[in-house]
Image (cartoon, rainbow over all chains, first blue to last red; front, side, top):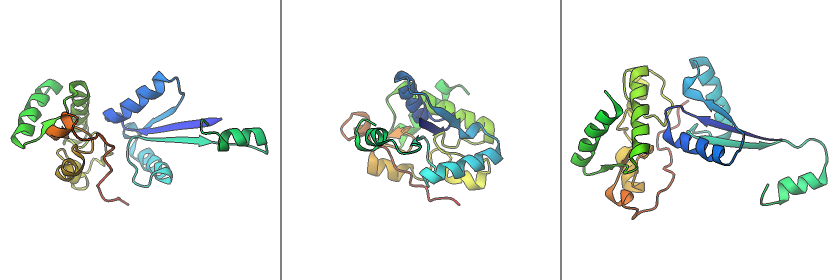
Length: 84
Length: 107
């Protein structure tokens, strides 16, 4: 349910540190290495990234939750628990 | 040029400037590999932690050492990508923080 996306650059060692952290904790994540895309895709991905981080800096990790319907237990877990 | 060769050159250059390279050599070599990759891609060594356009005039401020390096070292002890640092930063005498992007927002 929780979608994690890492906006990264293939040349950036700090981005690599975040990738290593996610690997070490077995956290699945979509990794987008923006510098490896063609210029049109780079433009599009930069716009996507700017929705979350207007400065479009790297690395940026986006953690999104999508909750469908009304499930009070799930809402409590996701919204009220500090471990969500 | 190999990353090790560039490391030696930048190390001398840093000391001449009164600063240092990040003492984590593996991390520093990784940054240098990024610089060399960008040189191969664009013809200049733009910051590996920023997305370059490939148009030199637009990337001039992020060609390493970037325009923001000295101000960042002065304020945070390290440059944006942690390649160049102060002696105090390397010695752990000042906290290692996430250096905020100083580059103006581009449209």
